[in-house]
Amino acid sequence: MIGNAAFFLFGCAAGIATWAWLARRRRRADASAPQALPALQALPASPKLSQSSKSRDVAGVLRGNDMAAAVERDALELSDELRLYLVDVARQHGARTVTIWRRTPLEGPGYDIVASSREGPLPLASSWGNDSERALVAWSAAEQLVGFERSDGEPTLAMCPVKFSSGESAGAIVLEADGAFSSTRDALRDWMPRHAAQVGRLVSLHGYRNEAAKQSRYMRAILAIAKDLQRMHEPAR
Image (cartoon, rainbow, N blue to C red; front, side, top):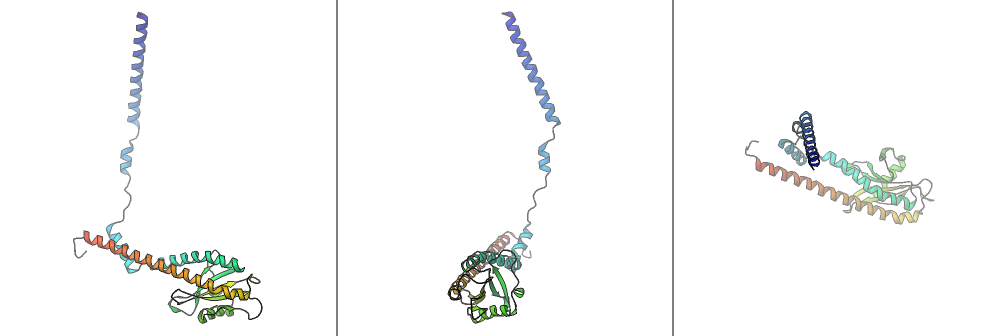
């Protein structure tokens, strides 16, 4: 009986000693470990846009400083959106390439290629085809007539004028074939005005959407400036 009690007391003492030893080791480890909190507090705060920088940004929108970037972005988006439709047109008529020509800005004498059924950079209108073929495209766009590069036999080049929904002349849609189209001349004459009308609608919708986005940018800029003015108490500033 006495032996069992002694054995129990010895076990308790051993357990208490072990717990005390582990506690001392934990305290030493905590004391030697680097403190994480000061390191985190020492990190620099993320940079924030100052009030004056915000004012310059929104003022730049109202002045049209972002117009060059917006025009380039809109042109790329229009090219990507039209390419999907031009791929279907090329497949329907067995064309090698379908391109959209548009009069250069400010009513210039030339035309630019603004979309193509092929991926990659758009070809330059000045290096496309030969002089007579480029002149034929310009004639089709100006005279509002469907044209082919030859008067007899099956053509390898076909074009049709494209208009905006408002009726303003936009340019032409041009189909090129390696040998011959899978559609006949009469079928092309019937189908190409339909394709041109669809292209005109797509271009017009793209323009309306971009104009709405532009007005939205202006409105957000005006609201931002109005909020800044409410917080200012210095008339000169």
